Figure 1 (cartoon, rainbow, N blue to C red):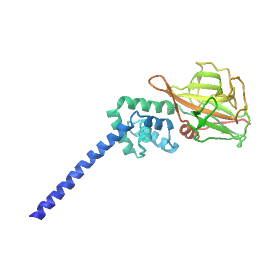
Figure 2: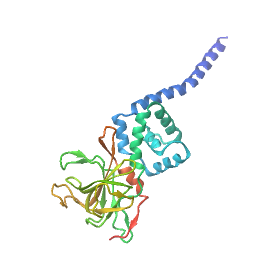
Figure 3: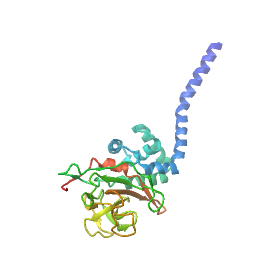
Amino acid sequence: MKNRKLSFYLISIAVMALLLAPLQSYVTGLAKLNRLMMTEDTLEKVRAQKISPKLMEQFREWEKEEDTSCYEYLYAYLVSGETTKSALSWYVSRMRLHWPEDYQILTGYLAAVWEDLVYFPVPRSSSHEEAAVTFGDSWMNERTFGGKRGHEGTDLMASINERGRYPVISMTDGVVEQVGWLTKGGYRIGIRSPHGGYFYYAHLYDYARDFQPGDPIRAGEWIGFMGDSGYSEIEGTVGNFDVHLHVGIYVNRPDGSEMSINPYGPLQYLEGRRLTYTYY
């Protein structure tokens, strides 16, 4: 009899454990999500854009199969580190339900960065393979000109250190918002894309034409040449560093302030979408 009672208790405990495990997992997941929503740590993950091109392509494929945007999958991945569709879908459904306003803002940042991307900003040369560009993840590395600060962009370095050689094209459709000389950026142009991202191209040698604020731009349109202008209040100063293109990406927060996003991930993604031009 005692053995029967013991067996009954043990079975009951095992059944309760099985029943409670999903609930415990759910509660643990919600607690984790609560720590992830709209915190500085979350914003840093969104800004850092640690995503491989292959995984981003996977999210775009999943988007075609489910009522979930690739930016929802991307956000869930950035904050959770999960990579399976089932796990990311769990995060998406809970964030939609419990934090709809914050969730919309955060996924909106991602759409502003990714939705309008079309082309890599420096075309290949059809006749000179040695005219290459290289880039690494230099976002928020220390810079000292004009005071200590973080590097809000990615530098595409020219293999041939010659200003005016490499054409620069717009990565997106959009409208010219800013153009002209900046002390840090030299000759630069800033383009606002249709979904709200601000794409900033700096240290140009020259412009393709006389751009004015409000001018429409098409993805792939020639906007200027790579150069080494900037780091001076005197317009036209060159030679303070090697020839390169600084690419910056910014999004607007609800309060109107601007937030920089790491361009490295988007640029890696666009390497497979690179045009070929004839230049020397």
